[in-house]
Image 1: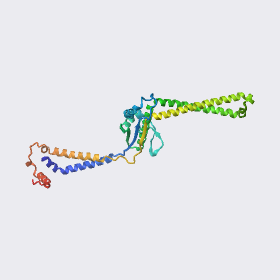
Image 2: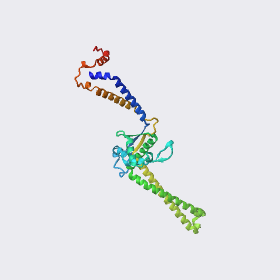
Image 3: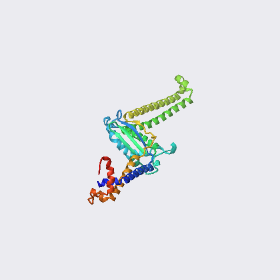
Length: 332
């Protein structure tokens, strides 16, 4: 009863301090509010349609488990984040075309600190049942955040593509080099043949009647040799080009499907300020301050150290408390 009477006595102080806390929480939020934007992307990770090369992977039945068990380790690995940091981004005001890496964006040469920042800022939410991967990035620069998430999706695709097709991709790189070389050799052979024919236009007539022009035998033999070389180069080029397309098809079939359900785009509105949270905290702090003042000012009464009976409560406090209880039918 003494405690309730004290609370009623100091009701104005409690209300005042709570209101001050509410106003303080709102002002604090307003002064410290910074426009943060939440950018997110949703992708679907699915196992490969086909695994044709056992050297690339142990078997298609294990691909789903591989995706489920490695996605978070991959996205949190230093090497993976490093590839994102060192990629080129459009950094600058007014959409300038200047491309720089994230070291320039964060204005530091310490790549380790940037890697740690990205690890903390990119939030991962993965559903093992549906294989849906949601990536979220909160930043004051929505355009940069959008580029980072889209690049992350691209890096995920490249990483798993290589994991499932390591041998095939090495073979493709080798074939690509040979295709380029074979094309150059074919063009050179065709060029030599065209020059020879241009310089020996009369051979067009001779070829129709080879037996009548034995003196042109060596020229005819030389042209046929050039034609044979050109045909061999053409066949070599076609075989390599066919092999290249076959490897591309094999890689496509063996690669996990990374389907973008919702691409990252800059949001139109920033994240609203946390007014409610800070206002509640401010009100609670105001109430705590009021309670502390009441307790310290009336320590003996609150803890009944003097065994204070109700009869010894000051008359004015009892009268005030009686007014409070009157609506409830109390006569005392």
